[in-house]
Image 1 (spheres, rainbow, N blue to C red):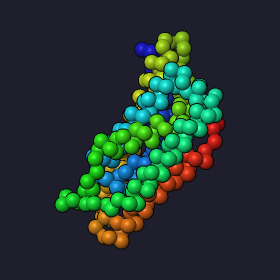
Image 2: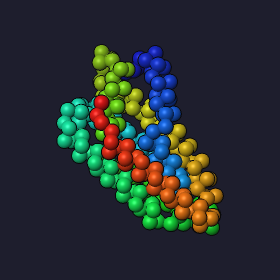
Image 3: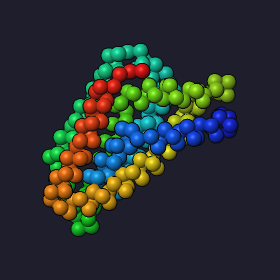
Length: 209
């Protein structure tokens, strides 16, 4: 086995604690759940996990070191992510929460997946965190470093998928109740847009470690 079972056993609770810590990914899925149906909420979580795997692969290939060493590249990726989150906030404010006869908002799971994926890969802090966290568990003497990165990254992504999807899943019920009232619907839009706006502000003001 390319990863020592004891090392993997020590990694699992650390990864779980990481997944359970409220962060940008969880808040994004919460906002998606408030605005969409359950399929879209789960798709958003899947997109985030897919983006996480991309970042893990980049870190394993050594590209993360380039991001860490190049302030300009880091800033470019970060501001792309900020602009995208601001765009999501504006679009949310302008788009009424449409509810069909089933009581579920009609939102494309494919679009939710793309949004989650892009939000994750456009945050350079993710790849820098991976470079700081996963290498503690990597043993170069056991074989391919990239394979070990991918295995540990898959554990994080899988755990994050289930936890973030659960957050989005239960948020849908709250969103459906609120959307039945025009006043509450406006509040729902402002709440969702505020989450995206705060995520943009957080990303814009973060400094590299």
